[in-house]
Amino acid sequence: MRSLAPRTFTITRADLVAYAEASGDHNPIHQDEAVATSVGLPGVIAHGMYTMALAARAVAEWFPGSEVVSFGCKFTSPVVVPAEGGAEVEVAGEAGDRDADGLTTVKLTVTCGGQKVLGMPKAVVRARG
Amino acid sequence: MPIDQSLVGREFPPTAPHEVEESRVRAFAETTGATYDGGPVPATYPIVLAFEAMNAFLEAEQVDLFRIVHGEQRFSYERPVVPGDVLTATLTVASLRQIGGNDIIGTTSAVTDADGALVCSTSATLVHRGGAA
Image 1 (tube, chains in turn brown, orange):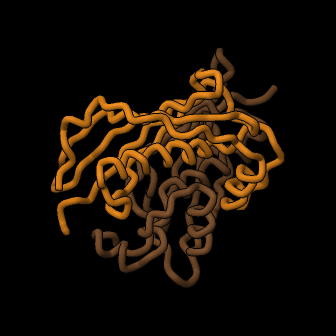
Image 2 (cartoon, chains in turn cyan, yellow):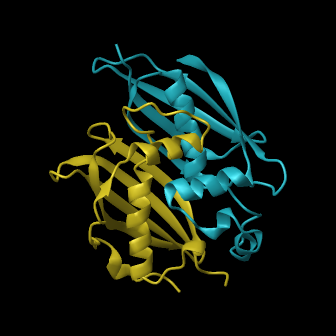
């Protein structure tokens, strides 16, 4: 396995508003503290899909011009985003060897405050050239 | 209230055709701080369609969106999605179980193009936090 340079992203409430608009996911647990806590969450949480989109950005930057064939993860721990400042998410990755079909498997580790937030995130890419 | 077990296996009506527009893809990419210069869309972009299909399903079953937390998401591509594609998502309820007062709903959404060819299979696990309130 080959280690890929980790990437760090800061998630703010403004990012969640922008992501809600771009994705169509207006679930208020990503905007409204009172709604989030009413369903037992620790506070406003990032869309799991937003964290996953950041992980996809890291993969796209590690493998420029490549095509993602599959991408999946579990959302194991919520990323709580404070009203002021933001939550830092780190995306690390390890790439396997390119197989006979030209596919490379990328195993990711996505953490916030040292805790894994995505379960077994894995992308398979078809690298260009 | 638990979700009715008879939903398993049910296919919901396809979403209205969605044309993948470059401006919308760019806006989606920019939320992550990335740039977009054409070509294959970001790997998670089909969630736009899958989410629309999920919303229609939740509405039909009178489930509140704010009680839903995402448990798992997968995308498997048959070919890259590019601007100009006209896509539709069809959601099927694949599994349903109850754990600790929550419903764990497994769904799959097939994303097809204007010719009806499969472009991307997505699957999502949705956790319906129904118990507490």
